[in-house]
Image 1 (cartoon, rainbow, N blue to C red):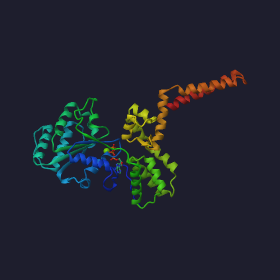
Image 2 (cartoon, helix red, strand yellow):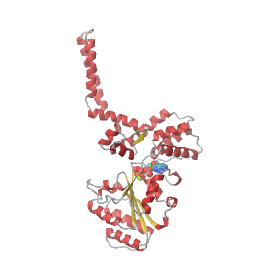
Image 3 (cartoon, rainbow, N blue to C red):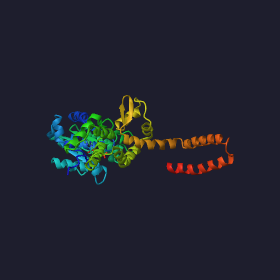
Image 4 (tube, rainbow, N blue to C red):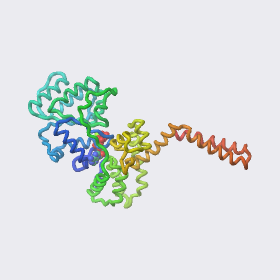
Amino acid sequence: MSENPFNFTRPAQGDNFYNRKEETKRAFGFIRSSQSFSIIGERRIGKTSFLQYILSEGAFKKNDADFREWIIVHLSLGSLFEVSKETLVQTIIKNIEEKIKIGTKSGNVFGELNQCMRELALKEKKIIIALDEFEIAENILDYHFSYWLRSVLEHPNLLAITSSRTTVAEISPNGKASPLFNIFGNLFLDLFSEKEARRMISDLFSRENKNIEQEEISYLTELSGGNPYFIQFLGFNYYEEKKREKKVDQIEFQSKMFGLLKSQFASYWKSLDEKERDFLANPKGTNNPTGHILKRKGFLIEEKGKWKVFSPLFEKFLQSEKEEIMRKKYPFAKIMSLSALLMSIFLSLSFFVDVDVILATMIIIAIITIPVYYLRGR
Ligand SMILES: Nc1ncnc2c1ncn2[C@@H]1O[C@H](COP(=O)(O)OP(=O)(O)OP(=O)(O)O)[C@@H](O)[C@H]1O
Ligand SMILES: [Mg+2]
């Protein structure tokens, strides 16, 4: 039995990591100049995969960087048993000590990390501290701790890489300007190009010698919109369908996938602000800044001078949200137009039928339709 080559549950590693050539170049530009940076991207866009890839020996080699020059400490804040300033700093120190022997015991973790950096500098060692899921630190990044962190980051032998949904400057517990502003360069991850997505789909299918037609590659590329997670998710399911059926019913497949991805779309929708939601529901003007933010987040694609929602599946989700927005903005719009329609029917019929009969019929229709309309909206 052939093994499904697609994977949508774990970060992509080794040969399963595709594309991101430009972003990799930018990352190594930062690394070579010892500049701290943040990997920023929407949920499931591939931050962890990218972070793991650029910290691999293979990526260092390909980008002419000396892997042995660096001590690499890589941790995900999601794996901390408790998110506090002390635990975070303690875990970083423990991870450094696992890589290199240093004798720092000052009794105070914050002093210890600074001591650690000085000792590493004396040994002429450079260090990368990579912190995945950095937004989890939001509640501990108060002004005082951020200032302290900034002073640590000033050590010339230290480079920090964070990954999160928003920039480090935006991660601050009470919306106050963060002292970490300006310390991190920003590296955004968005969608793969159509060509990149096609190549990835075709390559993964060919690994298991599964035949896939050009038309099917186009179909999956269009449906995924170039989002690596959707490529993996749709590819995985399409592969399974192909194992069962010679010809996949694409309309049925699309509606099945919509059902499975609806909650993912809902969580994207929840994470957007009102301005972004309004723009997504009705995108226009390619020089609109909100449009460009949504493009960077991987929700819109610029095509022939127009915005296009990245995937027809997400477009379908937006359609239902659009109706909801209209319902909220103009709660009586439907009722008003319905009343106008009924009124005109009433006037035309009154020439031929007894007025009482028409009135009674209309009241019955109203009694049935109005509650149905409102209950559907809930
Ligand atoms: N460059 C890539 N090549 C192939 N697959 C990828 C790539 N980037 C992401 N993926 C796929 O997308 C899915 C999500 O990737 P990943 O977990 O890295 O995203 P993330 O942004 O870290 O997600 P989260 O926001 O949940 O932390 C994974 O299943 C992975 O296989
Ligand atoms: Mg991740």
